[in-house]
Length: 308
Image (cartoon, rainbow, N blue to C red; front, top):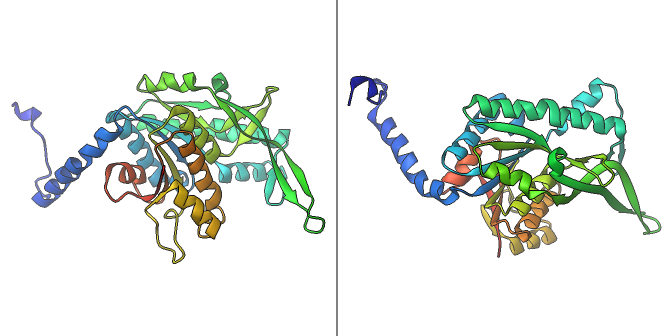
């Protein structure tokens, strides 16, 4: 072997460090084989997206997933950025029972922020890390056909339920799979903004968790990874529950162990599993390389929910 072709190492680094790196790669190999040619849908948001250092590591993780043969699909949120832009433009939002009513002016800003600045920032980060990413919204190729989302509330005095019209807020009605099939057959990673198109061509804002779950179900993903800002599903003592089945998760919701904002996340995971996803994971996105830790190590980085 020519001298210039030899592997170069830091002469000051202890041999133990080299051995540790080699051991880590060796232990990860069986997990890498498990996900080769498999679709992985990653919902990206929260601190993982807002922290520049974590965002850079996430981009590198996505590139590595491609390098080992997996087919990652990234679906991102952007709630804080949308709120900041609305404030900057002095556009006031109406809230009913804690839910934002989205009018035409608001949804224009939502689309601008999600499908514009945020989406392209993620695409640029992945490309800068050595990958090949392309940004989409759910409107491209009718990827996400949506219907208006309506919620019911019960009057505390009369107990009569009434429907809340939240405006241009939607939920997936149909995912067009062949749009994403193209990416599975290439080395391109799709980065998707959760904007859907309604039956009359209107733009509908969709919750990123919901969009990711619907896409994972339609694509028959091996894993749905939901990056969050907490450890995962916690028990009554605040300890992480590392593994649960779908039926156990439903039981924990009924018992009130899973509560608050964790309920819709877990329900999205359950819907994806019902649609054919092998398992869904609520991942602590605050941990560096959280995606790799979850997929390629025995310990993981969150709560995995599997079919019964």
